[in-house]
Image (tube, rainbow, N blue to C red):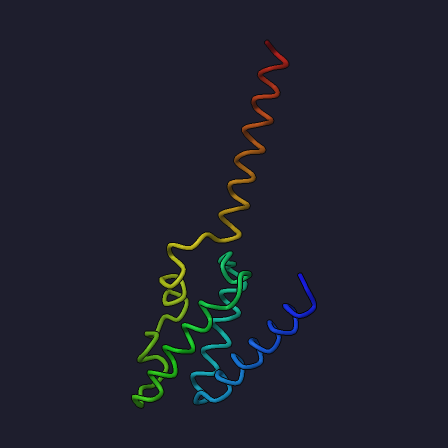
Length: 116
């Protein structure tokens, strides 16, 4: 990665966070919790920019402009809201699970080859 790419990424992130800080306080609180949740659950696409997070800010800006409370936008179960957003996304847990399955398969095959 080039230095210029890093600088541009930081500029984009600062602009993104400025949008978050411009939201009403209840939206900011829920955004922060969503961000934490998504980083823990780990959809792979979060490491490829912040398109998903930007889309959430778009949604929140629209809800705030209509005078809605944040839970009117997300529903009362914010974790379910997040899960719905990433339901078709590959997560780091998926990758890890695939890796474990492959390692088990290799180990079993190796044992079978030893006995034959």
